[in-house]
Image (cartoon, rainbow, N blue to C red; front, side, top):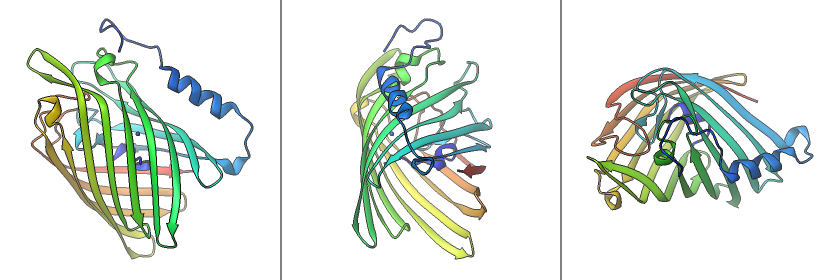
Length: 252
């Protein structure tokens, strides 16, 4: 997603009114943040984008959205964090999607790095919070910060087919390529596939191509996105089709 471009992570109650209770995973995350740490252990980002597109689906119905991330490193191997981004479900007021995550990273060789993690996604202000809450296990391997292959599996994603609601397994796979051009200007390309066959809704493909430019600690992106075959019947998103998305992000 362009709004969560800051972190492309290696990340059920009553359906009445707005559910505001956060899961115990976020409480445990808060305890980890409260532990003593040095300034260099902390990092994050904040930004704004013309649309919140995540794994090929718009979570803001084509509207502009803010996004943010705060994480803490434990040495060079472990990272725990919390990401948030604005969402605007159809026929609802604006809210936010939260993602709590834990990662373990490895430097396999001078040119190769890998990671595995778990994530919990929550939309506490969504009218249908129960049906857009899910967990995932994800893995990524990368080469020189250029090539990146990722896989994520969720055991409890919810999908809709007419009046039927199903919980099941969803799988996302993606390949991305980052090509420096000149100075801090670079080109980014990516393709992905969402396998939703076990949920009884259509699987779909998505991709992106665009430019990224760094100015100090600020990063600007202009990206063309295309989604093919999504019906938006899961995770509270909608199919954005093809569109340009611009974003600005400050990393600290």
